Amino acid sequence: MYPKLNREFYRNPNVVELAQHLLGKFVCTQFEEGLTVGMITETEAYCGATDKACHAYPNKRTKRTEIIFGDGGFAYIYLCYGLHHMFNIVTNVTDAADAILIRGIAPVKGIEIIESRRNMSVNRKQISSGPGTVAQALGIRTNHYGTDLLGDTIWLEDRGIQFTKDQLLIGPRVGIDYAEEDALLPWRFRVKGNKYIGK
Image 1 (cartoon, rainbow, N blue to C red):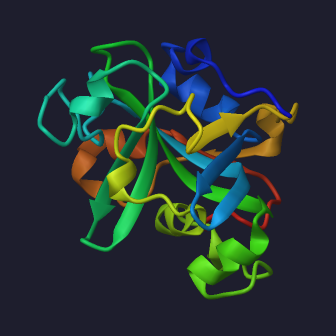
Image 2 (cartoon, rainbow, N blue to C red; image 1 turned 45 degrees about the horizontal axis):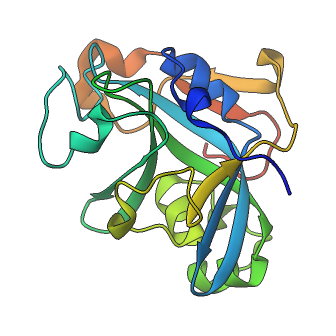
């Protein structure tokens, strides 16, 4: 058994730092089909108070964003283009409104389940190298909105893998041109050389 990430880990007030620390952690899901696990390979940070790319900017509470204003360590999941389920992790403390989008995972357990969900071989990087494919591979959908990540359906584990900054690709986030100058913030983090990352 590996330790689950605890509440204090998610309460880190620096969402950009935490987005880097999540690389090498493992997302686990336990649903009807069985257990699936993937190592996080790509993340993006979002800050509700100052970041025009964040759904909660500028500290704007709506029915959809309410969970982002809660305590760290809960799932914020939304539908993109009416098709793709996007799995985000709420961070910081209550009312801070920070979140991290999980953009890539390397499948490590429940491979047959992941392949069935994605209808492709795990040998193809496209199986989980984008935020919509991550959620599909892990079976995460919008009905899991608000799930406590300290529970037994979706959780994260620390298996002792850490990356230094020189092992990462750091650059601007994807698909947020509407965010004006904030679109240029270097808040996207990828594990250098890993197969399961976006371009």
